[in-house]
Structures are given as C-alpha cells and as structure tokens.
Length: 131
Length: 462
Image (spheres, each protein chain N blue to C red):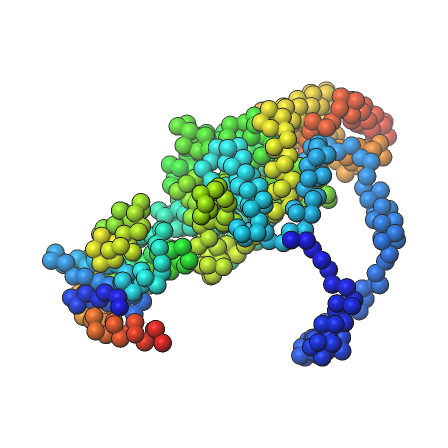
C-alpha cells in the first residue's frame, strides 16, 4: 500500500501539492508514482521564473525503464527548484514527500488547490488504476 | 548471428502451413483500386555474370579520372585493412546490433568511435552517428533549439559559407517545426564578415563551417564569442580530417569556451566516395546538452561479475521510450561506415591523421600557387585556405571540365550551381580540392593540361 499523506492535495497524474505557511505550494510525485517508475535516474525540472499551467507539462522524471512528464497541479510561477535532485535523483524514491520535492510555485489562484483530489479520492484513483 | 535467407523449399513449406497458395495471396486484403501497377515494368532478374558485366560497364564510364573534386566528399587513401575487417560477416550483415547481451563487439567498437570523435572535436560527448553531415546539421539545429533554455525564438543564423546542400537539407527538415533560418553574409574574402555581425536578432543558434565550403578559414574565435554574447548556441560544422591540424571546435572562442555542438560528415575516414554515399554524420556536444542529443549513445558499464561491458544509455531520449517527445525519430546509426571510420582512425592514429591532413594541404597550396600563375587564372578569395580553394578561369568552367576530363582529370566542382549568390562570374569558377593521394606528377599534369586548354581557347577566341 502506498503512502498518501492526509493533509496534501493530489492530481490524477500522480503529483502532490502542499500548501506552505508562506502561501507557496510545493510539488512532487507520489509514493505510488515513484514505485511504479522504478529507480529514478534523472529529473528535468522547470526553470525558476517559468510559468506553469495546471495540467500542462512542467518537467520530466526519468527512471531506468521510462520517462514520464510531470504536470503542474495548479497554475503559478516557479519560485524554487530542488537542485539536490541533480546529483541525488534517488531522493525521489527514498522520500517522495520530503527531500524528493520537485519545485515550489507562487500560485496564481489558491482556489485551484481546493479543486484537487484529497487523500481519499486519490487513493481511489490508484486503486482503480490497479485493475 | 549469421544471415540465412529462405530457400524456395522453406517458403513453400510456410505457405503450406498457413494454407496460402502463394506470397501475393497474403496481400489480398489490399483493395484492388489501391494497387500500384508500376512494378509490372520492372525487368526480370539477371544472372550474377550478366549483372557483373552490366555494372562493370557502368563503373568504367566513371573510372580512370584523377580526382580534384571535394566539396564535402574527398578522395583520401583507404588502407586495405579497413574494408577487409569491415567486410567480416560479424560487422557486415549484423542487423541493428545494439542488444547488450548479443553485441558486445559492436557496442565496444561504437564506444571507441565515440571516444575518438570526442577527443578529435574537443567535446564531452559523441553519439553513435547519424545518417550524414547534412541531415546531422538539421538535427543539430533542432538540438540547439531544445537545449537553448533562454531563447525559444526559433531563429538560426547560418553562414553563407556553409555547404549549400547542408543548408538546403536543414531547411527541408526544420521548416515545419517553427524554425527560421537566416543568412550570415560573407565579406569579399569568402568568410563571414565579422565587421558586420547583426547585434539584435536574438538567434537561438549560429552555424559556422570550418574550413568553409570554399576551403577558407573562418574567424572561429570571434564568431564563437559573438554568438555566445547574443545568447546563441554555436553549431560547428567541420571536416573531421582537418581536426588533427586546425583548432578543435571544443576550444573555439577567446576563453576556449568552445562550440556547443559539433557536427559534420565522416566520409574522409575510410569511406569511399561511391558517387555520393553512403556516409555517416557525427554529432558531438557539451555535457550540458547530452540529454538533447539525437541518435544512439553507447556507454561503458559493469556486468554482474564486475567485468567491463557496453550498452545503450540515455535511452529516454529515443523514440522507443519517449515516443513523440523523443529528441529525434532516428533509432539507428550508420554502423558499417562507422566501423570503417573507427578502423581507419585506429590504423592511422593521431600522427597518421596529421600527416594525411598536412599532405593534403601542402598539395593544395602547391596546386594553388601554380594555377594562379597561369595567365587568366586567379584566386576567387584571398586569405588562408585549407586543402581546398576556388579559382576563376577566363572561360566557362563547364568547358574546362569537359576538356580536362578528356585528359583523364576531374578538375573540380563548377561553382555556378552552388554559389552563384556569393561568387561573381560564378560560371567561370571552379572549387578544387587536393588530397594526400595526389602525386607531384598528377599536380603537374593538371597544371600543364589546364595551361594548354586555356592557350588553345584564347587562340580560338582571337
């Protein structure tokens, strides 16, 4: 069973979004996703200052067997990227919700966050996918 | 794995097994109105003897000329061992041999090839090759546009001194992908005019050929610095044979920052001219751009027992993993020609390569000096050249070519079809190349034959 923290928001494309105290939103991929991908070898992150739109490609995560697009969960501007992943992409597998974060956004509209899936709804999505 | 064709008995047995009367019945599902009947006119096959006789006649028509033509394909000596080894069945008939479990020999050879090209060009990485120099330039442009994170404008500036076939091919390939190609104009000496470089076009990439199409040497350091200042990536198109003598593109620029992508055609390395093909294109780049590189890349690794082995790497760039978002649709390399090229480089070594390049250059300079002393013959461009140069004749180049061919000499390429916009009186100009194969006697014969032809033509004219 994959880990699905209750307080985060999720998207069907397996990204998680976490609202921080300063109003920024941190984004990464879920435990389910990192498990399906296998060993991550490379992450192509967006550039700081880049505009990300909800449901549009924001980057690529590459494992030994696949390369998958990462989608923006909400619309916003990238204010930080996790450059630790340049040298230690395995953090995505080891700690997908912590040290394996991908980028932080300054959201255009926090209301978009409310429309994302909660932990329960996301777990259902994963269960359905397994059939 | 050996190649074993089907016998007629094999085919008959398979047809019987699946219950089909003949092979054409397997195509019955194609609606008859779609059938293209043009194959009906293909003549019947010939015996091996008749076929060899026919081909010998055709080859004779082109044979026996001393070649002074270049323009991207050069008559260099190919040591006998190159094709002796390349023709071995393990290399010659292997099909797409990239599986690590079955093709360690091929993969190791490609890895050696990549290592040699990276050293020659002064770059960090090389791929396993692409089809040829011209399509390789198109791929390099696409690569530069993907890799230039700061400039998504889609403008590529291409020097007018780049081989016109390369520019045309690139235009064909990139024009439907939102990329615009504009020209960098030349000065009177046949190189990019560094005193008139555009300052506010914001190109994403700049393409410079060295030596350029006319054999002239470009101001590569100035151009590299300027391109980088403009926020553009530098694509260097080079004749790999010259890399043993000229500055490696990886060192271009005043601080030696270097070009970002290096490409070109590997024909000078053990590949016969063969009426224009096949050949191989090489692509090298900086480490920062490696994930944008098209084509196969072989990497060195260890197997379960800790022994050195070779395998395809960075496959997520390729279409069998990344599909429509791959860096290119190429999923092969010019394996046989790369094999020949790698064996050639191994045989001649760095010193041999240098000797070939210098001998070619010295021969060219000798011919250049002697030709320009013939009354009426002049250099088209002043300035340093490398083993190739353009001359202006007092009469039509086409007529000179015909007359020289009667003497068994291919005197050069008529520039009228290739460079009419950049060379005045283009119909009187010839692009001449000399390689290490051209003996002093052959050079002397060229000079005397041309002198005679021109003397007779002026007599006729007056």
